Length: 369
Ligand SMILES: [Zn+2]
Image (cartoon, rainbow, N blue to C red; front, top):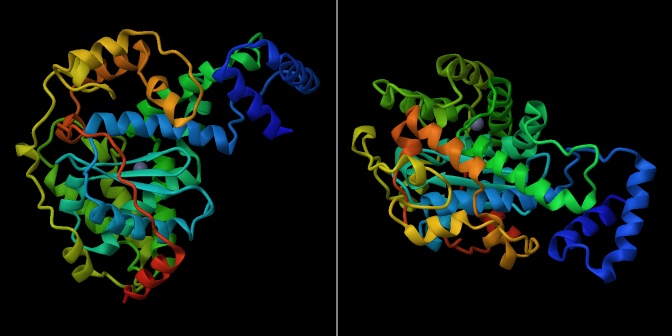
């Protein structure tokens, strides 16, 4: 039943209220009537991925993607190994390296994890990378973004709205999710929860657990003179408490650090926080879709996005940020976001395709010692 409802929602978005869909829509209406009020945030796995794809497209547009299959393969191997141990091993886990000096990591709903070139430069070992990626896997596995939206009641389907409005409804959620993910607006409990997942997954994979704390300590030290909350720390006022909790949970457990393989694969050097180039134009540069001075993209943004379905072809249009999202980002800019969040990004948002087989992952795991 759930499945047919999703199908109808997607069809309705692809071709609004077309005559030949009448029968299906009537059936959906019956399902809805039978169920009573449509559950406003009962997001299916498929819808979650749709939301996540939209969020990821905006993040890639904002920061660009490193066009290097080798680094993507390495990060994907580490990430896949961890994700396979998670509570949601069967999601289409995807790992993306963003082309910016800023230090950040973003978990998009449905299993799309982003980490920046700047973060890879600051990380010193595979166990630390595992700690960061596994933390993001935790956000996805426990659906923190979607749950945060539900808790905030920021996006709701009114009682009179029908299935045909579910497409725009998902767009609203995607915009809200982008805001939450980009600004790291997870609450403290979600961060602590993801830290726990990080420890558990790193340990299962054979890494020294708690290396995430080493990375956070280095990042905290780097950010000590920053006036504004910055990147990964935007929602982490109690960084020290968090680091202590991680260390306490890790205890004296041993595991592999894997420094040599990390250094063989990752050649990026950290950029001092004061030397990170930032996007000047807060109003457009900090939104997901445009870089400062990109008039064409700005013009496109003002068009009302036409819903063309959620196939990859339609996605490009569906991700054009709505005014609401632009305002949020603009006010974010004026209240001062840190240099990691405001960091300039690369110009190419195209994903880099890498294929990792289970044999590749098994082989890779043997190198953790
Ligand atoms: Zn987090």
